[in-house]
Image (cartoon, rainbow, N blue to C red; front, side, top):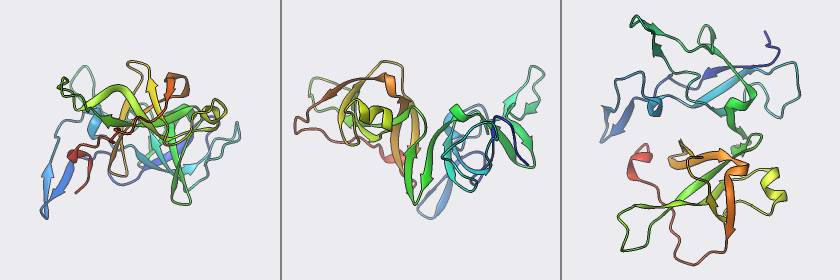
Length: 201
């Protein structure tokens, strides 16, 4: 069973991450299927496409776009699977809908994607908890490396380019490589910002 252009994947766990364990009890965080923030982004690869070569292999764990497993209500109020649904809890996934893949317990960026860790705001004059448009590269890629941008580097990214993910209990921003605009030298007061709700507890 293989697809010509798409990966075939299954969600790793449930389709939605609607619960969080606090003090030994499960707390329901969301009851709406429309909320993209509660959709599971982790998947296992069942089959790879035959039309091109890829570094991703069957059995790999990947981070994918939230709309793949998301359910919707149609115009008549009926609950529907996304158009990515194949059968038997399996889904089609385009190559550009994969953002990270795990190899030897290490997360690696896929194609032109990278992930940035927000940093805490240090100015007493600001009410923001994190510095806007500035972060630390968490997962780089070969394209960025050729431009001199590497993991743990302080950078500025372009407005409205980031998408929020929780990876290993860390809140990260996913973006394309060309959304990184400036690389900086560390000033010495940078602190990574990770809100408490990002941790599974």
